[in-house]
Length: 189
Image (cartoon, rainbow, N blue to C red; front, top):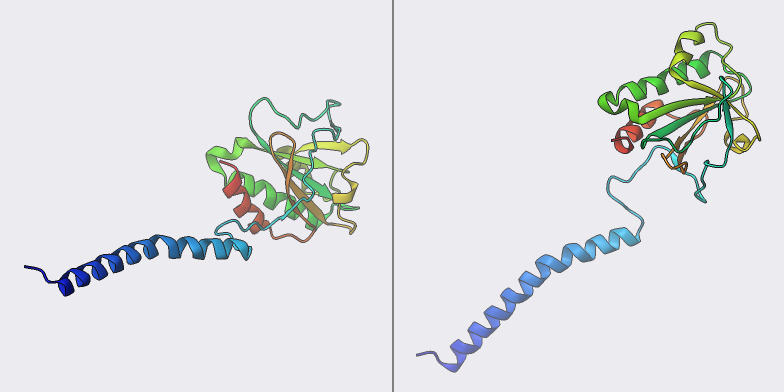
């Protein structure tokens, strides 16, 4: 037969077990809340910088080389990688355009879910003609993209635009093309 001391010991053990079970669930939740409040987010790091305040390019008229208007909102959900050259697009600019095209190729079966749009004066580098066949060429009619364009010669900046026309991320002149490739692999699925 159990005595009063045995009953108290059983209650203490059961309470301790209950507290341990509660701690198993509460401690990780409290750690997650603490990390979230400090600004840390797992796997959410982007190599591009977010465009804040968020804006839509749906009202930015781009006239393509054939005279038609670029449709930011496509018939199927496809993102746009927008390339904006500096004052002159020469050897370095063309090299980066090639790496951006290659980042699209690396998407394999999802490559058709990313459109390449070059907005500016055509590259002046002699080897650019073949490369530019991968890009749609356009002109910013109202100059609405001027704030995103790099100021230096032989440079290029990029903007990743959602299929509804919302600008997601900006890659300033001098960006890391490998970082852009990693971001594209995360976003384009």
